Length: 412
Ligand SMILES: Cc1cc2nc3c(=O)[nH]c(=O)nc-3n(C[C@H](O)[C@H](O)[C@H](O)COP(=O)(O)OP(=O)(O)OC[C@H]3O[C@@H](n4cnc5c(N)ncnc54)[C@H](O)[C@@H]3O)c2cc1C
Image 1 (cartoon, rainbow, N blue to C red):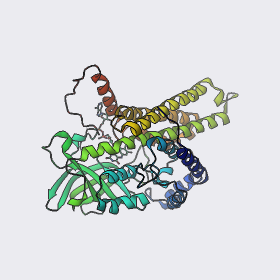
Image 2: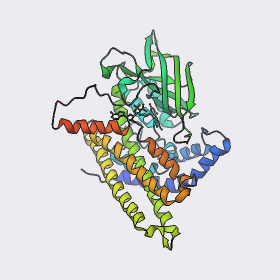
Image 3: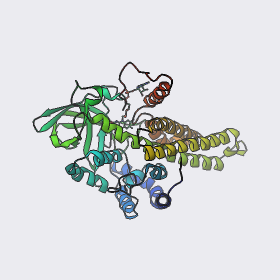
Image 4: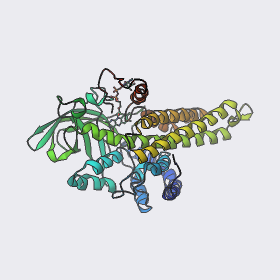
């Protein structure tokens, strides 16, 4: 294993840190204020377009994209420390055109898109002039298991017609959102892994209706997590991504990098929470001593540093393995960090909130919003329990190579 950062990675890291200090952190309050003043929780804050332009001018754009033709071509190991820095602020990823779900969608279109699909959707996504969503989860079925996904996609002449419901579709309220990549069932009689298909649905297609925007622990994220209803939604057959039945394989291809990006950002958020915890504990006094001098607080600080180093190293190992042996070879490590990083971040953020007293629960500090966001990571891209199942199954097969579970496992 070699986790040494390359020269270009170190150079990007330095420039990104300067951008964060000069432009991102100072504009967090303005971002919130612009949304609050508008009365629209889903406003695209004007400051974001300023930040995007500046990130573009500074060459801090599409940092995630691994394909040199379309981005800087950084490896997972090179992007890891950059994603960690982006994770420190809720506005940094969009400013640098590195936000999910666009990142995953851009990778899908890069890998599987036709020339026309790349021109129509990938180019504007890379330019940051449009945004997109990935629509898989459904309210009516347990969507951890991809075989349950039941929105119907039926061929009709030169078109496909979609009927069904989706929810928790991130980015669904963004005013620049122009397209959804939708996963649904084309052939219920095919083998479990071949029933699902992905297709591009422009957001203004007749029959596609936003039902509502779902809050996360009371927070309405500006980009929105939306419930959509599809009623006789008709799109050209050329909107298919790859072929009928490839939906599951495409999901697997997009989820590897997406999961590791979530973990890197969670580590960044936890680092910021630990910084805030330490500063607060040093600045407040109770019963004649600074809070930082209390042994339990020192214990929390030490545990946070130990746990952060552990999950960072496991994340870097995972990134290195993905770069050197491929996403499939790194499946167990990807599942492991997907469980470990959000849980570690949640523990640290929770303790930072505690050290801030009641103020930690308010929006005067970024901690409460960070907590809500980190909590979602125990669900997004598959719940903890499903990742643990992947790890346990692999472990059991070392002792019983024929180990099978009752149902075919098609985890998302
Ligand atoms: C903020 C946010 C954003 C999201 N964005 C998107 C998005 O953009 N697009 C999208 O398609 N989806 C999105 N999701 C949905 C997310 O991917 C799903 O919530 C997740 O995959 C779980 O599916 P489910 O909610 O249907 O839970 P279910 O499948 O109903 O599972 C419920 C619970 O059952 C338990 N469980 C399931 N399987 C097992 C098992 N094998 N062993 C033990 N216990 C098990 C777990 O405790 C699990 O949490 C988002 C979710 C959130 C919270």
